[in-house]
Image (cartoon, rainbow, N blue to C red; front, side):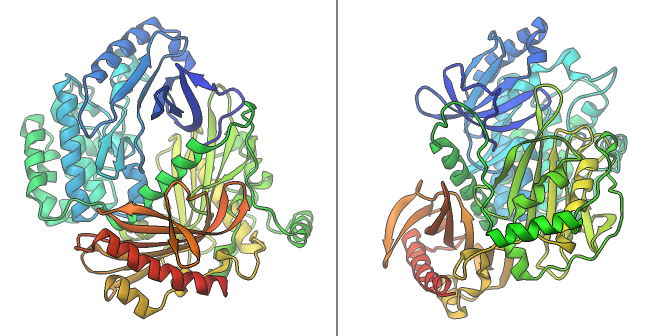
Length: 621
């Protein structure tokens, strides 16, 4: 999420605007608080659509149709004003990552998560189709993973752009090529069966981490959708029959949503998200709570600088390096971004685990790296939930703005597992991701050598050629990290310098979850021990936003905050020191129940024992 900009409204239809969630081709999405106190997602149409009366009429009809969709697995419409100066609608805010974010950050879903996903998608489509609608754009980024199941979003605006608004030019169908049905790709009339095909493509990706039809270009992808047969050997055998049936080219050969519901009920796995997805949901909860409780800054809407301070010595060293040209990545001029940086040299990147934990992600989005891309809008903003992520907004022409995000040391295991690098290398590292030319959203990852499948990822949104920009920025960041990495100056007992896998002893892990079957570093500040039946022990030692949205609990001499629930397990947050307003060095311990019978209170007791032991080691480090 982003703070409000200078031109962003403070109120939309009586809803107080708290933050900017994101932007799309038809409009933007804002986080708001409704007059009754509920958090809502407000979708506001771009102004250039507001001047077209036909669009307004279609939007108004679609708002009325959307109001009839009241199922548990959709985000219900709360209010709308299709006749206002700028049309908008608000829906119930759903706290959780998109399926796309979950797959990128945590890899493919397990069978319990897939059961929950298939059942939820089928239930949502049943309500949408009952209201006389076809979603038309069911894809991983339009599926939110809430605590109790998925939520299908964006079915209202998708239908409002029917007719001429469904075409960018003659015969060019709007939609997401990798997940649309053959009849949609060919511009034919759509029925409910079109959405069922999309379910098959979404479930294929959720179970494998890759799209069944993605090609090297948009035309190739569309050709694959219409003519190619998906390789079902990559899908779990339990799902092969239903996914194959959904992906039939003939709409009449596909199952109904009721048959999808029946199939979901037959899967022999407890319907729970994987532990890694549960943590993502918890992180989203904390992020939303931060923006919802953020004090009013006098209506100025200026972005606050949230870049951590460095010591004077670090600043002097940084200035000397800049003056000498050391560590400065070279980008193409702003007028000719094409995705390839001017390659002065490509030194191999070799960061120790200690250095990786101390990299200042926001310093990688400075003027030298971002300047050739565009004018920075305010200061870089670190993630609310972890310090190795940072984002910067960039002014572009018109009413929208673009964003560049960098993650240093994020999990890249799903990319490595899929084995589909793009053939390039940076700093001696394999590079994954990218997309077709002209895509306005793109993520590219360079997988670190000699790491637990961690990577450096640059995500770019709303550029004319986002993949070109992402490639250029990533190459400059890799160059900078190779020759002069910006490292934070921390005190000896700072959690940022702590090895999260080293603060817990083996016997403490066994007491918490039994004998672990694996241990993995999920980011430089987070470690996960996985046990049998989905149990897990997670340790995070990082700088994050406030944890006081959860209930306080006394543990020894500490005041911690208790989160989680019986379906997930117990999460304990212990703020150790405040570094800035709403920024704390925090130790987080989670005992995850998985599909086992670990009682919630038992999980909290075990987490408390681990927390006390780990806190003593961290404070003494």
